[in-house]
Length: 335
Image (cartoon, rainbow, N blue to C red; front, side, top):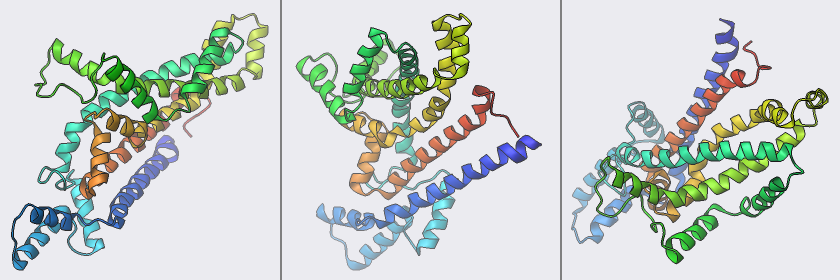
């Protein structure tokens, strides 16, 4: 009972409060954009040569406002928005009308999950392992070499690295495709040819995310380890004759991993940074490309749907890490 009242309940309250505030901001911010999606739709229809008398145009505008959730006052729109959200309905997309937003998200989400989950976990594991040993054995030559490489790659913007890889490995040396998630006209079936094709198309965007991610974690872990290895318990272990590799693995790196675990949960928000830009560069059919199209076309519903999904994923991952944190740090206790 103490666990529920003093540990679980406060975190659940904060969790739902963050989701409520975040989704409210998602509703409010797009309505400050200078574009009106309903008028844009009418202008598109008229640009195609279709004639509409004033009465038909007014009815069309009212129908579109109802479909897009823009009918009535801001408060009425807000209530309707929450009703739709609780049903998992974000309405139709503007620029791919009348396809529902949830359908577009379901089509793009597996691509982003496959790309992001793989690269995030691999970069986190490799970066922390390399950074941990490089921080403890700071006088080793290989550690200094990795540090020099990190100083070159780490400050490099995602899009510069992605463009460099694209030019080098897809244009000058055409080893990998220039873009996309699969061959044009290809039918996705579960066989060896499909798997190889998907891996070839995903390799360059994954590599650009991996290289940056590994050295971000590498530098962060190295700094934490260099701080931890000066603690008294490390000196005591060294004085006790324990092998340096054992001290690094079982004592130093294990303690230095605690802030990195929290960072792992926060890194899932990459859809708004490196993943978005990388998917744009490689025309990868994930949520990043979909989000870019939503911003570019002023697609309120699609923008709100993708942003809401990101809020839910990030807040849920942080909650899970927070609840599991006592398993990683024995100093933390449920009170």
